Image (cartoon, rainbow over all chains, first blue to last red; front, side, top):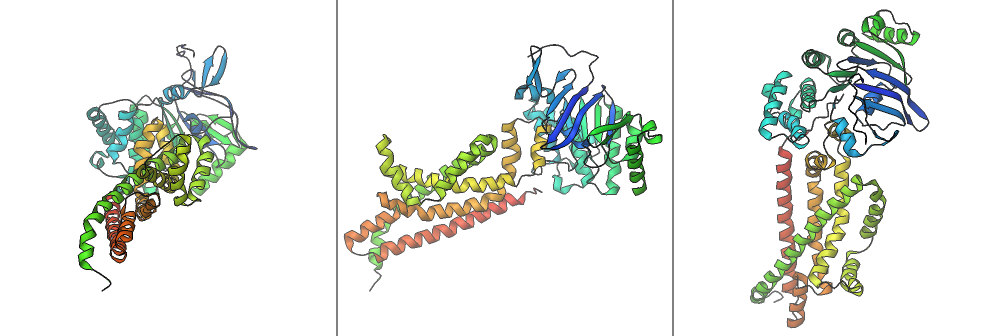
Length: 265
Length: 219
């Protein structure tokens, strides 16, 4: 295993010719994408364009068929042996994965644990934090997402928006450098979307996080992100600053997609 | 008179002793079944390569009579140098037999866990062991407690099979009393009544446990 120190110039995340296939179906084709430290990148596109797969591969929820994903200059699911890359040992994957957190469309809170317990489970068992310390931090994080007084509630006693905010606090409790948001407002009633987006906005403002989000909230993507990538049929069809991509899309597919989405309201 | 109360009271102490053996066999047998069943079901998930051999083993055990398995452990194992006394052989055979059923119950419990729970555990970097202990087991077990309880009662009611290898449990004791006194009515009836009462008590206990487990909001 190489003990090379990651170059400071290395991007936070690099997808290097990454491909994902299910049998004959190619979901992602030769994906190349660099994400800089602290950058906020939104991924948009029609369903089936492979956008969620990008996040799931980075979180190691999906294997990749080709290419290499790099995190701070280190391969995620590979290890360097000599000049070759070999499949990584689980310990290596866990070490790199510790830099990444994820928030899911369907929250995926642990239903048998209270909001607070959800937020201390991983810090205690993975980071080895003492209960008192983990609880203090979790209380701070729940306060940050505006749920300080709900810490003793079970997920079933919370609204969708509240559950998703707990999920964000839970992910933050592991102090990731990279946060992935996978359509985090899609399962919410419309009136609850705002409170979740507000939390993400605050997170981006106050923390030095690299953020990668798949979203259908075009307004939010436009206002929040540094860069927007439009995926179409497993490829990045167009990417650029939100003002450009939304204001003057160059690709015909992008135009069609944005028109369809904006018409739907 | 067909029923002799004096005789019934006379044999009661003997039957009470035998009842202890029956209960011991039930508790130990179910302990093996519950633990081994959980190990089998977990192994199936944790090590996919074991899934096929385990399902063959489970099918084999479920598709052959318990009595044959008891005989097998007691009479055939010694041929391979594994000599076990009758009680232990009986408990092991019953335990393994019901482990096969329990493993299927646990499997149903695991299958009911949403994929998102596993994925959230990966995203939080929990180890496989922590995921299992803290996330999966606490959600998978409570819903299957009634099914496990049913197997406990079923196992209990099958312990008379141990009389076939002369374990001095209730049935064997009743048979011995009958053959010595030529009175079968009282011992066999009392044994039946004992099983009835214990089964009803167990069912009530399981119901209470179920209500206790469901009190905590889960979903």
